[in-house]
Image 1 (cartoon, rainbow, N blue to C red):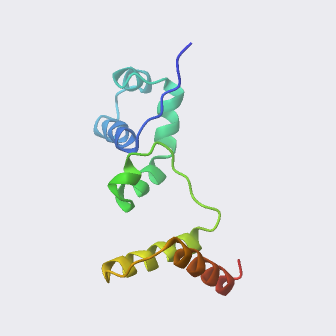
Image 2 (image 1 turned 90 degrees about the horizontal axis):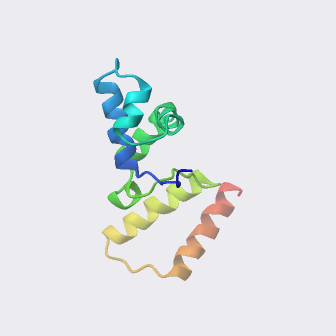
Length: 112
């Protein structure tokens, strides 16, 4: 029985690029090339749009992750991230209490 192996986003991108580079290559041979079960390969190819989106949008830290997870309140999270980046670009210190306060303020404005 195989042990589960978490694949990073860059490795998944490598699989997608290999599949796009040689579309005539069978799924079985492509899976063997990367030492993956065929079902894993099919899952990667099925979700290639979201994998490519994560690869292009997020920082290098996020690319080291193996799972793509969206939060429950994605709009709130994106707004908080944008606010955080703006504050850090202005060299303003942000405490955890200030961050929580901003999150609560934004969530009440958004009706969450």
